[in-house]
Image (tube, rainbow, N blue to C red; front, side, top):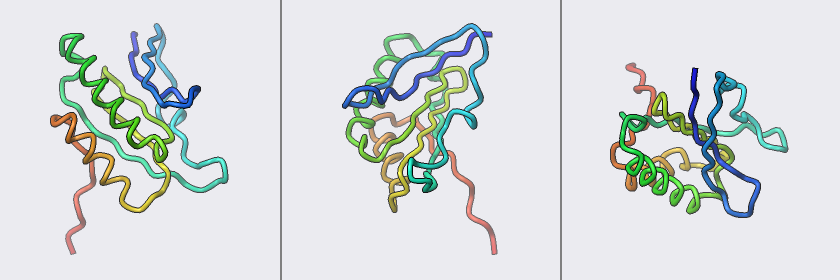
Length: 126
């Protein structure tokens, strides 16, 4: 089974998306995504769907990745982890727990990738 995803590369001063692929299934996201920072404080995260991204022509995928990269660069001081699964068309982002960042950052992504959809739980009915 081929697995293709794009991960956040934090090895340089500037955050960048790095494409990875393997012939065996990757570790599940819940095992890779950090839940706490180096000081033990919990991180926040969100998920976005980008419908049919993995089935688009390569130049359109590259253009979308560049838009995502631009947002990541703009918010790199808040972002801890990014995973884009092209097979599932899912973008996962873990961020420092800054008030409002889980709305501001998805809004910035949606402004550059309009088809991106924030996955959220509906409000509870009282």
